[in-house]
Every structure is written in structure tokens, then in C-alpha cells.
Image 1 (spheres, rainbow, N blue to C red):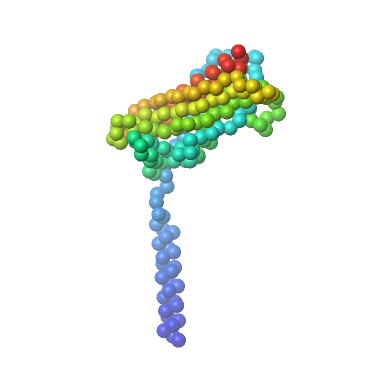
Image 2 (cartoon, rainbow, N blue to C red):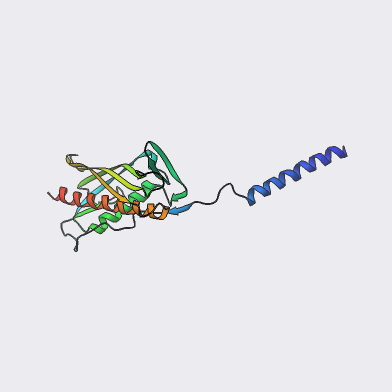
Length: 206
């Protein structure tokens, strides 16, 4: 009986020791977090007085890039940068960047959410089809970030199509480092959203 009790005590001690090891040595270090969408899109000098409300109908996002992982493409191979992530999922950051782009544009279009009590004039839908860093010169060279977005603008009341267009922007990374790559994502996102806001302002006003 004493031997049995000692065996049970030894098992408990081993379990406690193992638990201590797990808590002291985590499986992997925390990832470095990055953002994009900080670069302002170009805007006009003065706010337009003839404003109209554009309902943000949401953003579709390429499935491979729709998480908080940073997507890279080398030929037919798809991979994610190890140890680095977006601060939140890429679609969330892109949506925030879209709002900032319309605010900075100072055009007549005012992007609003469904919770807004304003009367909606138009509906904007974005579909992000590419959001990736392409290693076209091989894995040791700085990649080029590609952001491709399909934008459709409809009238709110009768759903009549105002316009449908594909936008694409590229930004080469200055170096093959995560900081330079995420800066290229920021530049390409700002460029494509700047073109989209200008297009919405012109198409709706016409």
C-alpha cells in the first residue's frame, strides 16, 4: 500500500513538473504585428458642398489573403511570412483604409454605413481579388505588392448600375524585409483606394 501511494505521489509530482515547463516555455514567440492604410489618399483642397451619401455595401476579399497573415506568392507557390502578422485581419484594415480614403478625398461622395440615419443615394461594393507580395525575381529579391479591386457603384433606389470597374496598383518593396514589404502594401492600398474614390466622385456626379 505504501509503494502504491508513493507511485501515485510520484505521478502527481511529474505532472506538476510538466505543467510548470509548459507555462515557462511557450511553443513559439509572439508575432510582430503590422498595419497598412496609414498613407492618405490624395484629396482636393476644399470640401465639396454638393454632397451625396454612398452606402458601404461591404468588402469581398481574396480567401487566401483574408486572415491576419501576410500573403506572398512565388510562381505557383503561396506562403505566409513567418513570425509576422497584420494587427487585425486584412479585410478589417482595408475597410478602415477605405473610410480614411473617402474622408481625405474631400469630394462630394460621403461613405456611410447602414447604421447611419442618412438617406442613401448610391451603393458601393468592393471585391479585393488580389492582395499579395509577389516574388517575381525569386525568393531572395524584394517583392512587388499587388492590390487588385473590382468596384461596382449602383443607385440605391432602383439598383441601376452607375459603373463597374477593375482597379489595380503595384508597389515594389524597397528591400526584402517585412517592414519594407508592409510599407509597399500601404502604398499600393493608398493608390488603389485613391483611384476608387476619385472614380466614385466623378461617376456619381456625372
